[in-house]
Amino acid sequence: MTHPRTLIRGGLVVTATDEIHADVLIEDGRIAALAAHASSAADAWTADRTIDATGKYVIPGGVDAHTHMELPFGGTAASDTFETGTRAAAWGGTTTIVDFAVQSVGRALREGLDAWYAKADGKCAVDYAFHMILSDVNESSLKEMDLLVAEGITSFKLFMAYPGVFYSDDGKILRAMQQSSRNGGLIMMHAENGIAIDVLVEQALAEGRTDPRYHGEVRKVLLEAEATHRAIQLARVADAPLYVVHVSAEEAVAEIAAARDKGLNVFGETCPQYLFLSTDNLAEPGFEGAKYVCSTPLRPREHQAALWRGLRTNDLQVVSTDHCPFCFSGQKELGRGDFSKIPNGLPGVENRMDLLHQAVVDGHITRRRWIEIACAAPARMFGLYPKKGTIAPGADADVVIYDPHAEQTISAETHHMNVDYSAYEGKRVTGQVETVLSRGELVIDNRKFTGRAGHGIYTPRSTCQNLN
Image 1 (cartoon, rainbow, N blue to C red):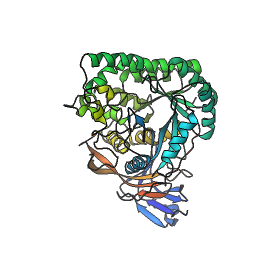
Image 2: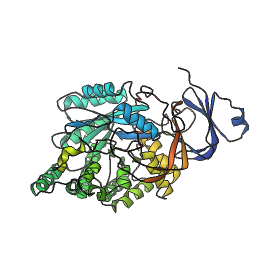
Image 3: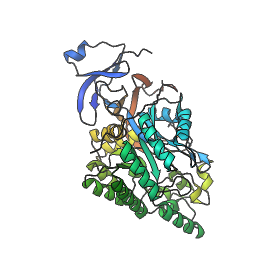
Image 4: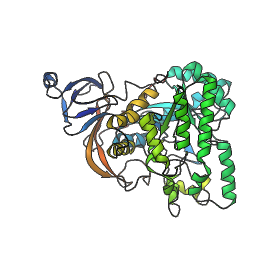
């Protein structure tokens, strides 16, 4: 397939390291060159298609390293397919997702991985890769980890939560970490003490505390902090790197910061919901709080300052969405009268880049840090850099023209995710995606979707590029 030679003129190119007024030349789906505006080099360029980015930012496509399209959970499944979810990602300026293939207990990793390949193949509007969820650590799955790393599936998620579903005990976690220490893989950890949480859930329900807000109350901050601490110590014993997913609490950030201060390969991710939402949402009247049920849960508002600080100091490196949408009608409602039956997850793949730009406007982070935590750091963390996550010669031409002055109101009425509510309904933000190229192909052109299912391709990954 021949790609039109594309020239992006007049914009401010923002990467994790630089902000430069430059024109960008794209050839054969890759960034061919950058040159200063009106320089003799830029003036000499010709192209089949010229995009005027005057007054706009030219940024790398976002890399969302934590999504769950079509994830089976609690008797239902996430409402976004790979087709609808990646289309929504494109609308939000994200051009690569890393989703989670799931191993079923008693089954091979390969079987789970093949099922996810089949779900995504030919469906995606943007590029995609996979992590592997390890639900059953045993001799054979440990051996399979090595084969997956060789195939470009270089990260493995384990759960200290959800006994009877995804849960692994400390011995299994240690063995998986030892294996990843040998094969170069990265262990991703859902750090909550699920055994203790289940006791608190049972007690709350027995006492008639069944509303959505109790989901947050039983999943205690201390049980996230304790599990984070334990995961870090197990990783130290195994001499393995560790990536803690969806960090939501100040005390958990402190555990990660303490480990990093020792020079350990410990990393942390947070999500927009923990930066912008709180237990106030879980406590909304009636059953409205169910919309905000996710795990780790939303925390009291005072935790947000610690998360922003962690992002500024690099104690937290990545903002992903943990996009796992369930419709309020018919799915979240499964938990009426019993908060423990509310499917866990929020929609967000379309909102991440805009919410983080709002954080720039609000003074929480700089423009370059926005690109670092949303594009470059996840690409490096999961072995996709510099193919993804930056604008530099040789990189894939995953490029977003971003209007930093446009104003929009986030709403389910206008979003493209396949879910009947927005977690950020009515929130006004400054900044909007205008045009998106994926490997040089226009997928959003002046706020119109011009992409197609099947444009997105599976992208194998190298190992983590952040290790000491």
